[in-house]
Image (cartoon, rainbow, N blue to C red):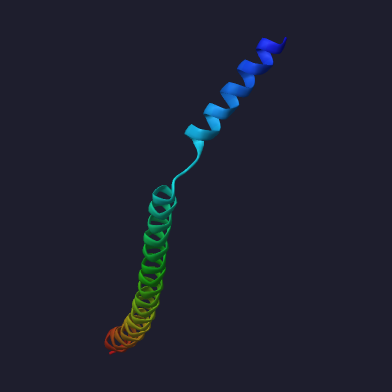
Length: 85
């Protein structure tokens, strides 16, 4: 039993030494996190810009549809007038 406990303690000590992160590992991870944060902010700004452009395009399309409808109504009135003559 004592031998098992000694082996377990030795394995625990070895795993603690091997498993600990170094300062450079932590700094590397922090730089990766900072890079991802920058990428997320850029993606968010790009999405906001795309949304604004899509809203402008939708407004333009709606205006074109209204003008088209007005033109169709005018043409229909002219056609009906010409048919009555």
